[in-house]
Image (cartoon, rainbow, N blue to C red; front, side, top):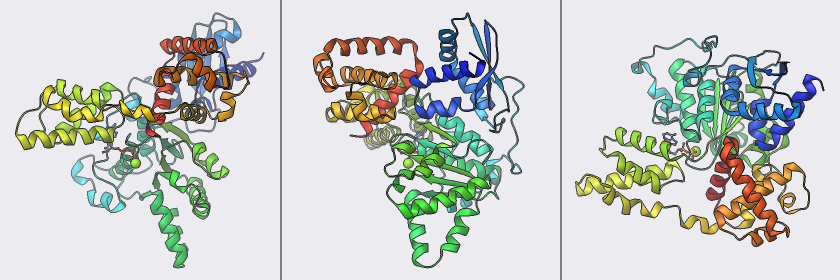
Length: 468
Ligand code: ADP
Ligand code: MG
């Protein structure tokens, strides 16, 4: 086996345990630079990938290399190698902290503005359609959004050069619009002359229809194709709109060809957007895709803390934890709960205590939402997450790419729906209950050491509960 074949086998193995989006994003343009019996050096296209692979996938890569070579490989190093086409330097902001001293942060292509906020063109930002609250400075970074955040920062620092397009997806109220607009703000802050356009997909569609009707296509093209940064929110609404898709396709190409940055958000990955043209799917997937998940407990507390400070509302940590415990789904709900609490205590003119907070947040407790999740929905959600057919999971095939998601379904049926093993077997094409038991144990065991699997399950659960 030569090094190329070896790496292909490693990738083949890794692919099975990762989502397609993650796999393509992180392993595109990687290769083995050199390998000895104890050490492997992997070439990666840029510093961003290097940092991410080191942080998240080192263990998996090492393990996979060990499996395949039977060798005593003990260490894996990553080396930025521009053999691949992607630009090798990106601005990483906070993400770059702790990277090797040789890491260079490239200056943005626009002249830098004075950093003082007094020069920040708020009026301009508002005119573009940006909400002045949605900036990086008040975005709390947790495990579930760190990749999306890092990518957004990178893109704002080097529009058109780092990742183009950037596609951010995830459930409602998880900060997609906030991140999207923060990119716009950041670019304007750095370079007031940068031409930024923020639109919802709906707005783009309406503009287009309006232009068609009034013979103003030329103006429309002028407006959308001569900008530096196009931010499109909720692109999933382009589903089924053929002419708008056609127009967006050309807008997209024009901007991308001119190295102008495009960032989109969506509630789902491109492949899952119904009746989205194949050529658009491939365009949307061609840059960086990253998801945002539900915030974990610590992140929820941090977000609440920040929002209270912003509103100058005094509250102790115990109360914040009480809220964070009760409201788990998304940040929008978290804000809603906090608003209720602030209103109540201001009205009563009392200080919040866990006892006064608890009844107010009780209605947010994530108990009754689970009722609506059916085994069928669960199978569907897992299938679409792993990009396989529903029928493949209930079918006979033992291929790993089906068997693994199938085991996840079994695990989640037990864990989330409290289903019995025989009924789990029955739901999955009449399998034996011992198969379901085995699957449950296996996934549980994997979860103990596999961070990625944990992350995958979080995302699946999030989709499951936001889709009902
Ligand atoms: P989405 O577009 O994903 O539905 P939004 O961006 O509209 O979600 O976020 C909902 C609300 O939650 C907004 O007020 C936003 O400022 C806030 N929010 C979301 N994520 C964060 C975060 N990580 N830190 C601070 N605020 C957040
Ligand atoms: Mg939004």
